[in-house]
Length: 625
Image: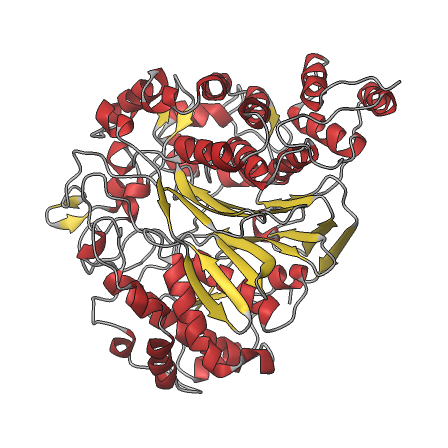
């Protein structure tokens, strides 16, 4: 007779035994092979599996299913029949894989993974941020778009970031004015409640456990000692979360306890987002933001709502592209760029200097139109048909020269040329999932730049975003990413700032094929696009497609940003491209549905990510090229 006990009951038992959150997830993944999903119920464990778990506790050495690679090392892939989660933190991926193993679907796993990722990689995303999700249930084939982007507070004004008539980068980056109304609490709730199969508490519980005690990962340890270090030291309450008793930063493997955030997440689990937008959590956040120079009021939170939108749709050869509409610029820029490239038959070319040149020139056209037309479609009119028009793309393709760049003004309207490159954007996370049933999820969530505004509310444990910096502070002047904007994207009360986040789903022959997206500010668009082209045109394996070197061009500044390993750099320079060679500019996560019904996921080694599945059937590495 089988001893029946729920997976989450076992998880609580492991917690009482002192097993860390990461080890609990590993034990469940290794010793609880998935069964056919049973919506709205928890899987059960037979006696033998329970005994196996107890043995794992006794030896205190749970097996590791996946390992993280060194940054910019080989890309690791995992193949499964029970669904794959690809996040930019391997422990977060494991949380999602455990949810799938417990009978959850891609929506359940997506919400759980993003909640976990916001704790494990707090510099990138979290409860104080916002983002976008695309979800396509296999049963209906309809792509749903959830916009949980931050909004400007009611007291926001178009000139709020000007000092002596000039944009203040500091005001847009740090402090209370930089904070937009967070959308993640509402967005993840909406995703799971509308499409999930599990009870809500089972989706949130893993994040509560992690917040109470987790181990520092390699990327968090690196970020604490990176570009954000000096700014963190100016915010001692926030910095103290990640410092030892001697004042030194925590290191990989050190334990961190965030009890205030754990209590906030427990309240979220028990009451849903009402506690944030209408209750004590929100009140505490308002006070913290205003103490840092902000202009929040209770009505900013109580009036917040997500938006449901129609996906941007395009075609590229026999692929259907489904991506994010405004206030994200990613979908429209991507579809316009692909429409241009369709005229050059990249699938018949090698991935060499000529192909890279064509991709760069097409991207410049897309970003030039972005600068002129993009904003929040709830506030301004955006000519979406222009971006998706095959005829318009044909006229742009005709302008591209085989071995030369165009004069800058021919890519778009003449606007002052900034010189700043895109900064290191460590403040965004992307998640891709395809589950066993073929349900597809692509979600990107962000606090914007590393550690967001650095406004931290110690009562709730929430770190706040700085997405107000994505607005155009002054038309024609560059924002934090060197991006030019027009009055279309100027600040207004309750308006959503323009974004480059590009969560994307791809169908092949009308069937699920790819969930993809990334982090990296405006390089999200180019990184996502290049990965897709590597798969669709250059016939690379998933691991090769992620590992291949990347370029980024955004029209203004007139600079081509490249990783060191791009083929034909000397030829590109001869054809007129001005270079800035640097480290990784984007991080991309993908999951592919294979012809045999299995799923293959790859997490970008540039961000030390790792995919996870409960029943990995294959792993493969591909060298960078």
